[in-house]
Length: 292
Image (cartoon, rainbow, N blue to C red; front, side):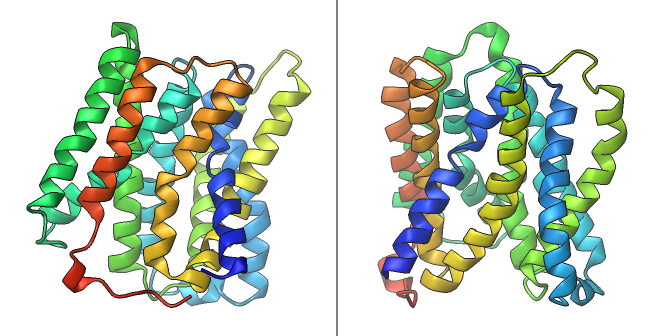
């Protein structure tokens, strides 16, 4: 990987490890609806002009139906479910539960007939990964938090389905335009809910700055870096980011928020990562080295 590739990879690993911390800070003073609205509104305000002035927005003609579906699946329910859950569970646990996205994507791909190679070592990987989830939930989740775990599962499902929609239905559409339009759609959806739950008491500046960073850096900025990383190292290597950002989220949660480094995290997280790697790796005979 080139120096530029490493710089992009490290930057994205850190940036996509930040949202859990920022959401946790935001929901201490703001409703989940306000947090989600501010996040998508700020992201749209940055990306929509870029998509418009580069002519990418006009190239969405004929794709709008699937752009809308992608916006709902990838962002509408996923962002709200994650934000709502973080009112009740730690940012570290939320990030580690989200790290099961590759496992879920592997199962969905097999169920939809998109990948017929879910056998052997991949099955072992699924078993190991979900054993890690069982450890996380069994050791770190109390009975009252099970609803939050259920909410996170909605986010996991949406994050697993979103890329499949892009790959199958939006591969010919410009990526920045798809994301910009999706963020705009969600800003319109969440605007009335945010208005109804807008805070009536003074909100600490740190909460607002956290939401600004969430929208500008972790949403708009992250997607720009993401596309640049794909162009630099190829999609195969880019997916390795999935194994980096949960670890960043745990470190930030422990060091900044004072969240405990629990036995569930110490035991379950490595199992989830190992399972995700085994369940999603390609067979050696079918791998092709991406260009860098």
